[in-house]
Length: 178
Image 1 (cartoon, rainbow, N blue to C red):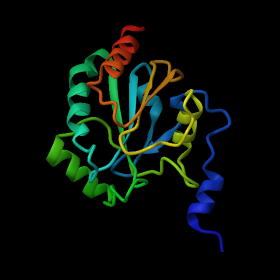
Image 2 (tube, rainbow, N blue to C red):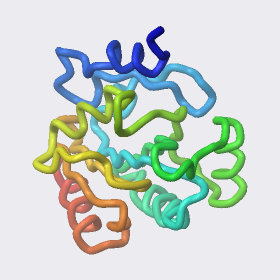
Image 3 (spheres, helix red, strand yellow):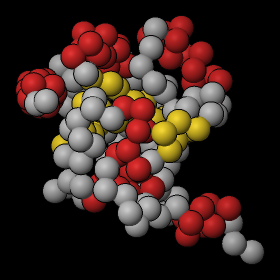
Image 4 (cartoon, rainbow, N blue to C red):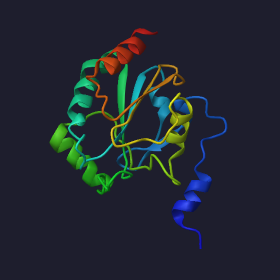
C-alpha cells in the first residue's frame, strides 16, 4: 500500500506552468485557500517557521520588519513546517494562538507544509529551483525574498535574520524597484 505522503509527493510537483510566486494557491492558517496573486506587486519574504526552535525568537524581528515596511510593499509569509526535529508539532489553531499571543504576528500565516523530503510542497520545489543554492532547506527559518514581479528569488540561511546587513540590503534594494 502506498502511503498518503508518497501519493502527495507524486502529485505535488510544481505546476509545469509556474513562472512566478503568483501561480500558487496555499491554505492560510485557518485552512482557507489563498491565491498568492494577492501579493502581486509586493516584495515577499517567505519563511518556514517553527514554534519550538532555538530560532523561534526570529518571529519578533520578522513582525517588526513587516510592520516597518508593509506600507513600502513588503509582506512576510510564514509557512509552519515540522521537518526539523519535530519543532512544529502543533495544529494550525495551536500555531496561530502561539504566534498571536507570544509574538503578536499580523503577517499572513499559512497551514503547515513540508519544505523538504519526499513530500516537499510544490511551492518550495519552485522556490529552490529559482536560486543558485538548490540544496535542501537546512533548518527552520530559511528565507526566500521574492521581487515585486514574483520571479526574482534570493535565498537566505536560517541564521540570516531580517536584521542581518545582507538581508536588510536585499529587502531595501527590492523595495526600491518599482
